[in-house]
Length: 112
Ligand SMILES: CC(C)(COP(=O)(O)OP(=O)(O)OC[C@H]1O[C@@H](n2cnc3c(N)ncnc32)[C@H](O)[C@@H]1OP(=O)(O)O)[C@@H](O)C(=O)NCCC(=O)NCCS
Image (tube, rainbow, N blue to C red; front, side, top):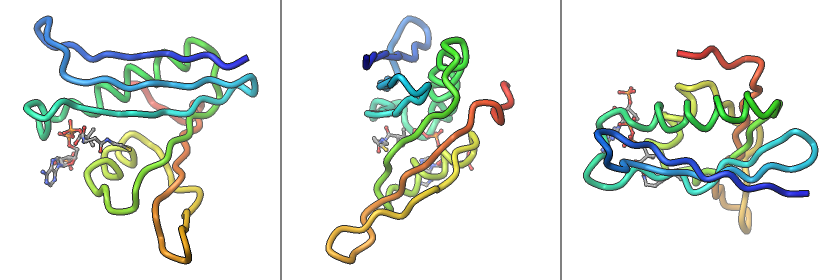
């Protein structure tokens, strides 16, 4: 059975960003639709949004989080790497690099 969790990050009662997790029955989750709203970008909120998602997954005994990101989304890739995600696969479309699959093992995540 699949389960979906929606996460919102709020600051001073205002929603600054959101994301979604699709959980499968193999104790894995796919992180999707990571978004910090435009006027709140570049302020360092991404790590708090990601942390919130990761801590919820830890509480739910999820072992691994995966995500897809386009290869040229440098800011997103940087945010994911900083929090501990690693590239596990390069995805090609008609022989052209399109994006990456990234993975975070939750036993490696050090809460901050
Ligand atoms: C990707 C996204 C979630 C990042 O959120 P954010 O809160 O703006 O990012 P942060 O402020 O935490 O910045 C993350 C890193 O990128 C850098 N960065 C942020 N904006 C930047 C910019 N415009 N130019 C260069 N570097 C930038 C930051 O300096 C930071 O690096 P540092 O930790 O070494 O200082 C946000 O830009 C977004 O919602 N983008 C549109 C949707 C999207 O692409 N989602 C990802 C789908 S996979």
